[in-house]
Structures are given as C-alpha cells and as structure tokens.
Amino acid sequence: MNFDDFSVLVRARRTNLMIDRSRDVEPTVVQQLCELSTWAPNHKLTWPWVFAEVRGESRLQLGSVCAEVMAAQGEPEPRITKTRGKFARTPVVLVVGSEVGDSDLRTAENRDAVAAAVQTLLLGATALGLASFWSSCPKGTNDAVTKFCGFPSDTTVVAMVYLGWPTDVPKGFERPAPRINRLT
Ligand SMILES: Cc1cc2nc3c(=O)[nH]c(=O)nc-3n(C[C@H](O)[C@H](O)[C@H](O)COP(=O)(O)O)c2cc1C
Image (tube, rainbow, N blue to C red; front, top):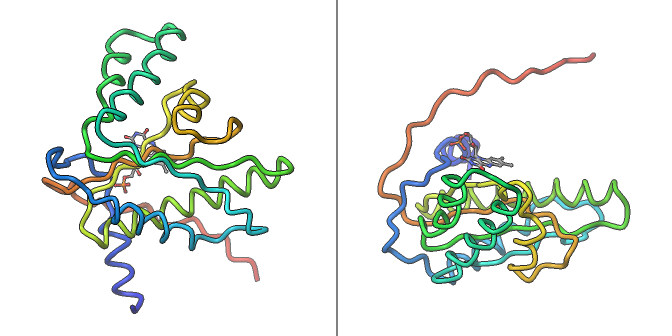
C-alpha cells in the first residue's frame, strides 16, 4: 500500500451510526478486527486491551446496566430511556477496555495503546466497508460496564464501538491544519 491509498482509507473513516440493524456482522469479522487492533504500539508489551462482543439481547442488558447507574445518579429520564435502548441501534457493540498498569504512568500508557488499537480497528472496519462509531462509556457507568463485560474490576472502558453495515455514510469534513512547532 502506498501513502495515497492509506490516506484515502484514513479519510474515508467516519463516525457513522447509519447502520442496517437487520444485517449481522459475522463473529469472524469481529475476531479479525480485534486481532488487527493488537498491532497497535504498546509500551512494555503489556497487551492491555480487553474486548467484549455484545450482541442480541445482551445489547439491551448493557443498556439497562448503564441506565440503572444513570438513574441512581439522578440523571434526567429522557436520557436514561435513550441509553436503555441505544445499543440496539447496531447488530454488534464491541466494548474495548484497558487494563490497569503497575504504575500510574503504565496505566496511562496502556490507555494510549488501547486508543491506538481502537483507531486501528476502526480503519480495518472502514477497509471492510463497515460503519463504525466510537462512543464513550456513559458518565459514571465504567465499573458497571466493566463488570457486565467480564473485565478485571479496575479496567477502564476506552470505547464502545458500534459496528454494522452502513445504510448511508456521512460526508467528510476538512480538518484544521495541524499546529506544528518546528524547532531547529
Ligand atoms: C475518545 C472518543 C470518544 C468519543 N465518544 C463519542 C460519543 O460518546 N458520542 C459521539 O457522538 N461521538 C463520540 N466520539 C466520536 C467523535 O465525536 C468523532 O470522532 C468526531 O465527531 C469526528 O468525526 P469523525 O470520526 O467522523 O471524523 C468519540 C471519539 C473519541 C476519540
């Protein structure tokens, strides 16, 4: 692959929730994407990423788990109701967590590595023609989501990635020029 081809791929990736809910994404495809993501850089080779592939009824259970925490936090009812059903907007939600390190620095580096892994996964999804959407874990729900996903208890949820076949693709938009200090 040359730079121009790679550039086309990078620019084609969009945060996209226009997904065909009725069209499944094969588990082998999700497996392929998880494996690809592990080629991200990773200081000390800690392999900090953990994945949970959430499908079927489990998507609604995941929504309920988040909604219950939000209700306990006193969040507004419309937001709670939306959260309850939101993971059913796609056939697969891939929850990606980062394991704690043996120091604050390593924990931060682990999270950086997992973020790089998520971007790698999104680019892989784009190359396969899939729509993807990187969503944050709803505020305050990290521990409940971690438990639901079967991750170690001190895991940080870095991304909840919606994956599916697109019904449409949002338009791309230009990025501001990067700020580069050139020190010579
Ligand atoms: C760490 C992280 C968390 C994000 N969480 C959300 C989210 O919770 N909801 C959302 O709509 N988009 C979320 N996004 C996606 C961004 O909104 C999106 O990348 C941005 O609007 C640029 O659009 P693009 O990805 O199509 O270039 C998140 C992105 C990152 C990197």
